[in-house]
Length: 521
Image (tube, rainbow, N blue to C red; front, side, top):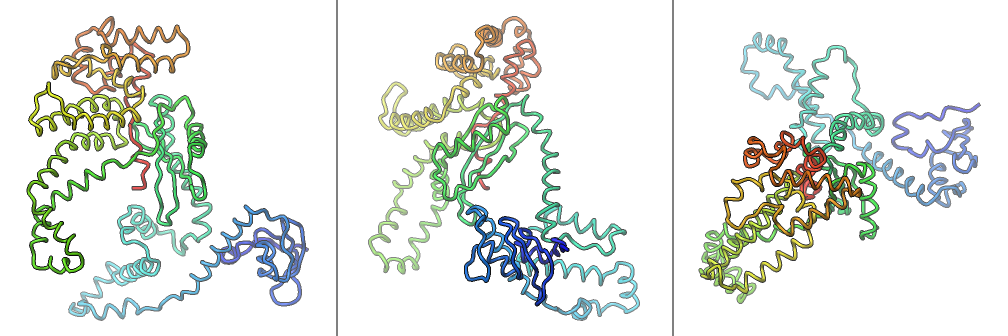
């Protein structure tokens, strides 16, 4: 007669390979059973030691190895076996019997209270039981190495509050290891997915930006995060472990394709991959500049001589540099002309909707960098600056590599850039439909968006009416609100007369232009 294949939870935790065999019957001699492998149907007599040797393909274990265990399955079994070994080691840690709370309390100032009053307080507020629970919770933190900031978690506090204030939970036992990693984890996942469903439902209307970025976890594993971003906020899709993989374009494309299929291609507006960390140098220089006084005091102190003994030349060079006013003027100059660049990078390095702002930021950035450099070189606007041309070339090359037609189209759909307020700020500004580059890139986008020439013609008519303030876009409120309302609100209020263009605008005006939310921090 077969015996049950179910084992106790403790046996499952420390002998995880039992689940891959069947116990046929008890046999004479210790805790041995007649066992049948679920992979190769081989039957043998023994205990868990032989089960382990059979499935992990360990020779010399008194049983033949399983020929049907594949390499991938063997890796899985070894992982389970290692986890079980760790549990066994951990279980060897005996509970330390510390003094009872009642004994500890004798050392407190409670002895100063009137015995009758102290007894009444303890009875009314159950002080001793509360102190005991506090100590038990604290020991859980200390013995398990739990971080103290866990105590700030609202879920930590609500869990204990619910247990303490629910009268019918007498005899309650916390969930076990297996329950936490199994059914409870699945249940919580379903709960989170239900919470995220409203965001998923908005993808078709609002559009989605899929972003990916790489980072390394505490075990130094190279991970790549994939997230879906809408104006409702970022939503985690998956994390890919790149250990042992060649992280070339084919590897990224494969996983990006999977992310697109999960979101559905019709909902995807754009894809943004790993952003280079281009702000670090400026940030470090800003911090270095703020320490000027402290650095100068350091190299002029008596203690500085102790550093000179190690490398006299280097120490002298550092001292002369830090005390040189001309050198600090150069630092100030570098910070001055890189500040506009830093501002744009910081402004766009977010999961907020900034796609419709990038093109104007780029133009303003170039103008502000030129202004600082020309002021420093004491040049007029008509003069030539070789240094500015080098900086501009570098920035232009960066812009060319990272900009897309979507930047131009989204800029063209921002009603603010057609308003009298914006155009009058600078005499050189022109509305987007009068800009040659913007027009060319906008047309490219429309051709890709709309294969049907008739539909594309209708969209062009809608854009003409919008950009020139014609037809239903010519009313006073529509024209006045261009410079007063945010772009998306304007399209919601006034865009109904251009339904196809409105749908595109509402998607594009809610998109970010950075993958910063994908970073581990």
